[in-house]
Image (cartoon, rainbow, N blue to C red; front, side):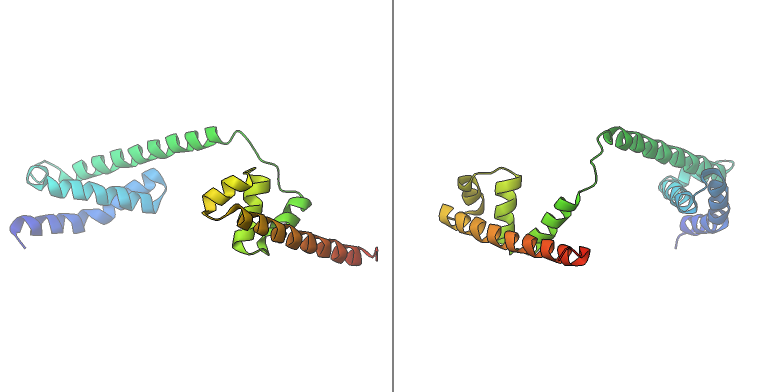
Length: 169
C-alpha cells in the first residue's frame, strides 16, 4: 500500500464511525447515514490528493455526506409525492362471486383458463385468441367448452357445499 493509501486508510478508520454517528443523528436512519458517509468517503478517495490538503478533510467528507443525505431525502420525497398522486382511484374489494370465480378458474388447466379469461374478461374473439395462442379456432372453441363445463361443475359444487354448511340442505 502506498503512503497515500495508508494515509487514507487511517483517515477512514478514524473518521467513519464518528461521521456515521453524526449523520445518524441528522437523518434518524442508521443505514441511510452509513450509505451517505460511505459514498462521501468514496468521493474523497477519488480526490484524495486535493482533499488531504484541506485544513479539515473530515469536514469536507461530512459536508458531502450531509448533501448526499439531503439529496436522497429530496428524491424520496419527490417519489412519494408522485406515488400519492397516482393513488386517486381506489378499487373496491372483491366480492364473494369474484373470489369464487377466481378459485374456480385456478382449478382449470392453464390453456383453458387463459382462453376463458381472454374471451370472457378481456373480450377477445375466438379468432383473436387463436391468433395470439398460435392454434386453430376449433382448438380455442374446445378449450372454452371444456373450461365452461369445468367452471359450472366447480361453482355448482361450491354452492352445494355452502347449502350444506348453512343448513339449507
